[in-house]
Image (cartoon, rainbow, N blue to C red; front, side):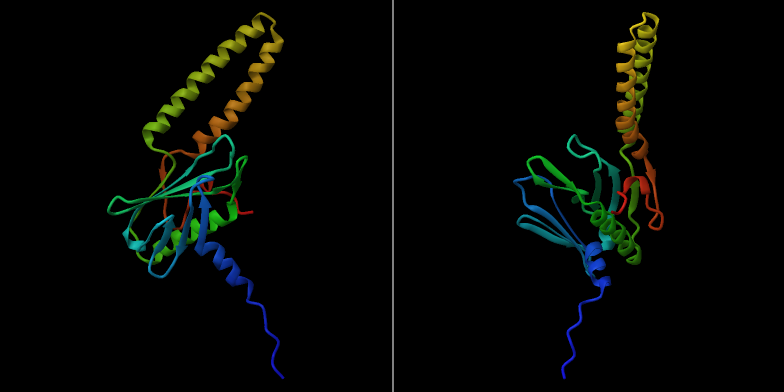
Length: 205
């Protein structure tokens, strides 16, 4: 009697989530497809494709990049030694009005990419956050807006314009949550292969 066919173990499905990743950067463009192979990072964007050996990757930069249609959006910029660059986003366009998050898949792929690079003896620069100049400009802008809002709030309270004061408090809370979160997550930093910056990776769901 032949043995009944068994389903593949769950581990294989989990491995597929960490070794393959794809997203659409726009509705009309081709999907960006990536795979972690024994030879290196395999990629395909439209008619272009290639394989980058893990040891040839010179820089990995992780950042938090929210947009109007998706506040939970993360980005990885991967640069090769010859200057070529790949961009991996944690969201994918689905419809005109929907940019879907791919938190679990993105986090698994980026984490596994770092593990493969470490195994290959990579000496890549691992950078978190945005560039120092942009970060300093963002901090300065945040401070100026905070000062302006404080002055307006004090004037509104002095003139007993409580409706305006309430509006300013709400605006300050929203501004601080959005811009403050962007600044906090994107603080320039370096990290190691065994300690990835959790603020620059989505929580797996």
